Length: 291
Image (cartoon, rainbow, N blue to C red):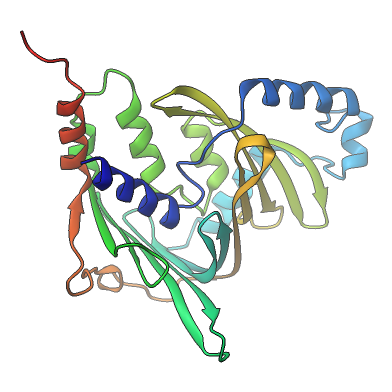
């Protein structure tokens, strides 16, 4: 069982690199806040520092409004994705029919001694209404794996510690068409810190629940002032190390995507693991023995 759970975590981390991250200590976060306050790195509304940052009248709310305006008449959206993190780097695509269908495919490649290109890992994510599939295959993984997550069934599990609800938030991909509003709905508060041309950089401190307790993490994103859409997302782990880095580009809208474009079939011979059943088994194992 322990080995199964380890494989599950590896797959989740690899496919959703911006989720389920290790965290830096609370002391580091507090020190960072204090240092930022002294240096004026996070300018206050209306301050001279804000003017110097290039933010002008830009606020989180104005960026949310820009994203809503962009997406007002959009039925489907797609974008190119470049990702890097502790599991390597790769390129791929993301597409969605809001709000029920999401797909992300990322492939990492390398060249052998003869210069021939080969695939290290192929990572696929599918959200089909309330069911999610996460797949990782290729030479760079110990064992090819597909994980199925039924969000409705996950929500029914007993959750005295809040860990299950935290898992549900992490497994379900954020709405990348309005990441700021999605974060706000989940209690994460981003703050604009600077602007460079059309791009606005925002930062947020997050709290992640782990078996060891609540630990803080840090996220830095860039958003377009013009359309309000996500251009990059960086997540930082222990000691401020960069744990994952996603870049989004070449957005396309209303290309005629259909639900069948998100259909998912596991690769032949690759086992499908039910995440909810695995959590149930883990909870049973953690129950104190009956007298």
